[in-house]
Image 1 (cartoon, rainbow, N blue to C red):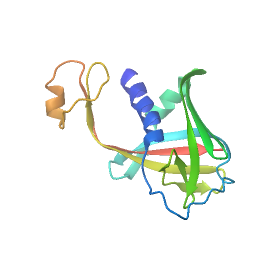
Image 2: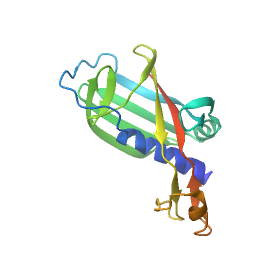
Image 3: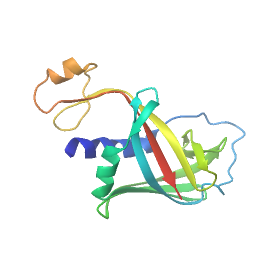
Length: 169
């Protein structure tokens, strides 16, 4: 439970920080497709870190069953992203919203998306590097599973992964 919840909480935070596109001069600020409330409706890890293979959503199903949810509210040039656990707000982040080449940009960090249904459902792939976490859930400087686990009890190695995330209006 704790590791799975921490993994998805970390994932939710990194969605805001995800960097994927440049700030082009021909930026379009028409928000019609993105305006409104978006709910995270699916999260699953690909079998391979290069975003290929089958997708396992077991951890997301378990997290959802315990009430983990996320809402991305887009209103003109601003956004608010709220993460909830069993109805309680765990985190709420706000910032500027823009659109570049039909991709949403949160605080000028653009997310490369694929429309599933234009205007109502989109997905994105997030690639995460491998890392080691200490007992206080802080990242360490370890660069291999062996060095991470040699630190002792409470140190956890997380392999590189590619995660598919879907938002639905």
